Image (cartoon, one colour):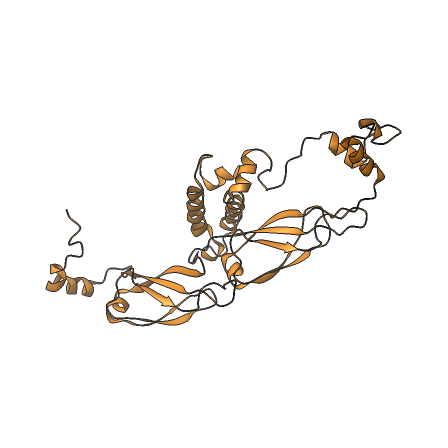
Length: 303
């Protein structure tokens, strides 16, 4: 199986920033929305996303590098010690006598007390929590969604609600869906670690959303109304006359859901884009535009 490092095209000593940059570059190139009908790009996007879900999390990356989990994020088979056999009940007589645990601690010391309690088997013990990870799209995290997940080990699919404003690295809890309890104790919980895929356009900045929108030269010079996307649908925005590349417009309340209620804002950075095909009339105008030739936008930079 190809390693996640190879999938992202980075070395094993790459920084977390290098890994994120490599993923964003590949995601923008391979995203299904940008390659409709291209099954090959879709499959590569899934592989790249899975690799980033592993390496983008420093804790999981460390476990992978140490061989504790494999490329899919599944735990590798652990080494077995005495306690594993003692708890499994499948000892085959190798670690027990007719007296259960008594052969390990005869007398009144602390070990005798411990093993006698274990041998009695009367303690109730809550089931252990089960930890899983799940990757979701940026817009699903921002707006919330409902999905079903299949946990390892079989069993029925579980309904999972992704709350609006879910953040990358957030953990969702499914109560009672972990390992079964002992001797009638309640089951543990299932803890779902959420990884949010970077979006080709939007990026989160705390509670706010930032992105870049291209505008034409005429829109930059003359201003006007344009339609721009937001995380919950397109809206009309007014471009002021003489707007330069880099000018940022604030869309109040169009950011992410805040934990305590309300929303952050969206910040739209404008980028002037010239026509793809050369326009002789535009070229002729600029050629005869004396004031434009006299303008030095790099004045004061030196050199």
